[in-house]
Length: 289
Image (cartoon, rainbow, N blue to C red; front, side, top):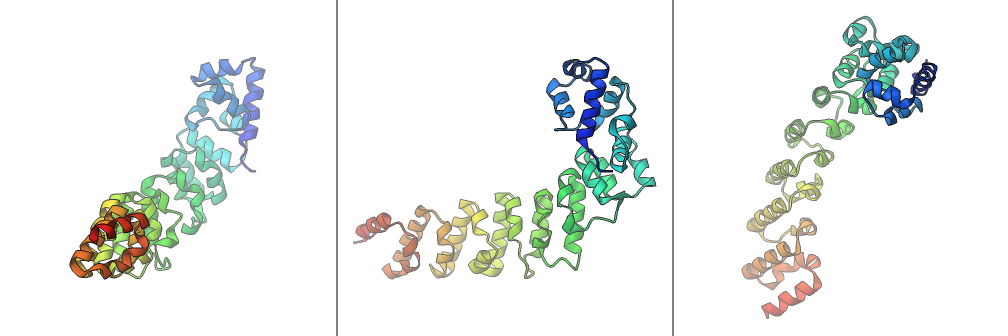
């Protein structure tokens, strides 16, 4: 039987009225807002699991009568009574049951149930439950996914990325830098400092083209972009600088152009010309001549 918070809401409403209680009176007894009671009764939300035993007592109902029948209700009842571990020792929990109840379980309880689902979740099919399990469990799943020979690159684990700890994500990205794998899908979930560190290592190994292939530039800090441009300029002038130029400020481009002209003459700025603002370029040429 499918789990229905609407039916639970109707039971709460019906029993409250049978006991001649207003929503405000029930809210006062539960030390919550009357809006919370209203949301329960309309089926917009569920009582917090820690409140279920108290709610059943106030309404003079058993948890079975409040939650109804079916596997989701039984799992939720045991969790409310602090008996999740005992329940999963004796029962394998179908995936669909866990998906229905997971939003209402504390993360530690969700972790215990996750480990006893049948069949076990595949890494490609866990997006729905990731917000409800603990960060440490997500990290463990991510590590196992990275070690899985069937996982070609980190993009295959894209659904996990928003929930993986930044430290582990950086570690895994750095481990994969020297394989022919895509890591750009990880960048939105790393801090700017982490992206800068990873990008510097990519530059050391693969140069600007490798950074472009891995889509580093949109996620790097202005400081790191400027440092990369300076390193590139010191190595071989403005050659291939057009790869990085769209991500540099006009001031940075201006400074590079000035250095290039001073070193190699006016023709040296040709790679940067499309990226220099017209007015800035005209002003700079006037100053030069």
